[in-house]
Image (cartoon, rainbow, N blue to C red; front, side):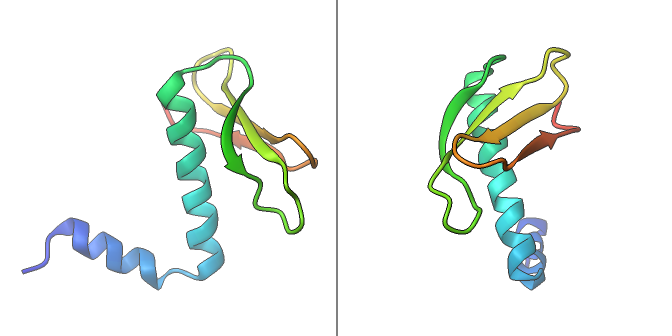
Length: 85
């Protein structure tokens, strides 16, 4: 008998590869940021996902404590993750 966790894992595997990869990236950024609850940019030690970029992702919890901002140390890749808190 499958539980809801098994079903969720199966559903995740059915998603396109690019969707799974970006979802996993955001999960890692959220996890690294929440682990330290830093409100100024700090390294997450996560590599940037852009092709040929060797930068590291830096993140912070925004001043309102509601979103996570992230940016690459080497390229212009960056953004924010809302609805985390």
